[in-house]
Image (cartoon, rainbow, N blue to C red; front, side, top):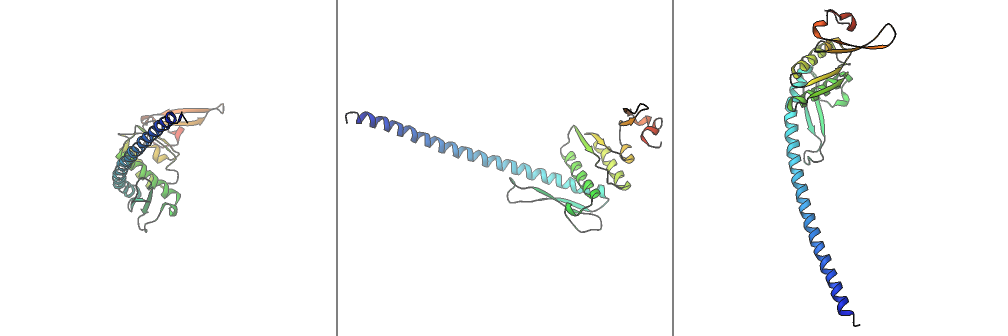
Length: 206
């Protein structure tokens, strides 16, 4: 076959090209795996540090909002933080530690509020919206909830949807929806110094 030498050279050139491509791919794979390992290590350390910071503040917030007891964040897979989730273990005043599933609706709401407040203290955000978080809280818990709102509003603006008079007392501005004489909805805006003058609109006694 007179064309054999040329064909051989062509195949050999193709072989060398593919062999170099394989080497390049193996090097790229090794490099990418190294980057992934570095990112996993970085995110794991950042995650662990954040959980540790939030955990301490969360415990303090829980005790403050419940007037006692304790709570902590528990990693679901402490050996692999890249896939680990976070559970909550809570011990209400006078009770044994238990998971969220065993708490009442009001207790779960207050526990969730404790975690949200802890996150905001560790890493404040410009604003936070809460929708009837206080709906199942009793008067004592509402008072403590309101006090924390007043404290944290120095660094975060809160937009709170509530029907609770106690929570309303923490507001700098109240927006309410009422029905006018024509049965159409009306939006009212009230400042704290107008509570007494317009108390009949929101049901708050001066």
